[in-house]
View 1 (tube, rainbow, N blue to C red):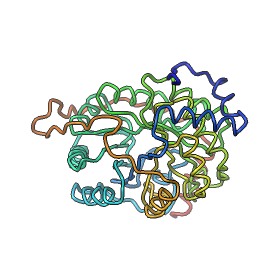
View 2: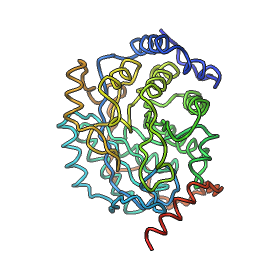
View 3: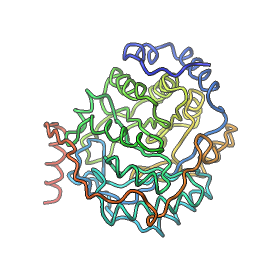
Length: 365
């Protein structure tokens, strides 16, 4: 059986990525079958519990307040609303609910307390719960763990070098520090990135170096294809080809053999044949539902039809890790500390981000 390595170099990963496709697919599929059931795919539902108004300048994101993208913002959903959506997701075959809030970082207070109740509620439905809420402190990670959080998502997005071409309002190290804070609890890590933002294959390899050299490696790695949204700085990017996605999935599988590799954003542009090739190459997780936060996604019934066609089965919850215990707020060992961590704000200038911001101001005049 292949051994999980934590010392991959960029050159080694580039050599894998550029292998003749048939050899790459064979190697990836072989490793996939050594570590996973090739006919089982984990299905997650992504739910935007607080949409829009984010202060960050991520060049790909329609939820950034500084860009004009016609995204309708909404305040934090109620626990009752989230429970209803979770039950609907469970009925459609999802084993995990991933809740996303358009925040730069978590702030102690009533809204975070509500999110903790959402985590408790969904865990009690016997579903895996994942959150993506921005940067978090160690204490906040412990509070999420006590509530019953199964996974925390915090994507690296790209290589450290190319990250500076996409985002200027936070630093790469902040991403790694947040992952490190999560690792101090029993919560699993979900971290991946986006291809198609104008990066080179060297940057894709660099992102995989950053992820694979973490010890332990992330339990889940989403591979997103950029969905270029009008009004964002990356609105004119050409879509990545399916062959690039297949290569990225296969390379990720080889470099991180025990990780669940998730086909995420961009699936609406992929044919069933293309997705089948990604599953063959080692993808074993998808997001289901008609939206991924604010961007389109295949209908869940279409996905179930595809699963039937390919002989795939949805993975049951808590296969990879035991269900966490939910500790009620009154019994919590950890309480709000009112922390004000100094997350970095590099604020270097990214011309296309500045141009998109000016364009938004003109539209809103």
